[in-house]
Image: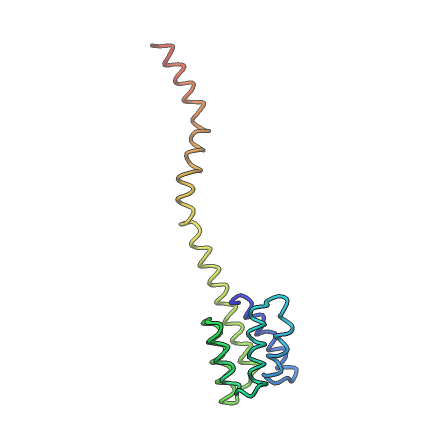
Length: 152
């Protein structure tokens, strides 16, 4: 869900820029993303149902954050609540938030990539290097044993 959230926010940006309200945008993106990210789409759909059932937008969004238990979702909900409360431009706020989430995703990927060499030390030391030494030094050891056998 964490990886698909920036894509869903981009769809929300497109919907809000085209004139949809946030409630309609949430309902629309939950239908559109059902195939690519079913878990996240279902959570947004449940929020849409809560809003249609009479819950306030803030309450439905906070329930969404509680259900998903993602820090990124908490940030998104806080941003949506603040944009709703202070009347700021929703599309621009979503665009900035989406860019920030994409940069976080790339930083997480870079962090994981930086950890790979450390994780590869043990397998290389135990499996690859001994095999390589046997292959490289094996013929030389056999010749050394034959030469020393002839002298003694």
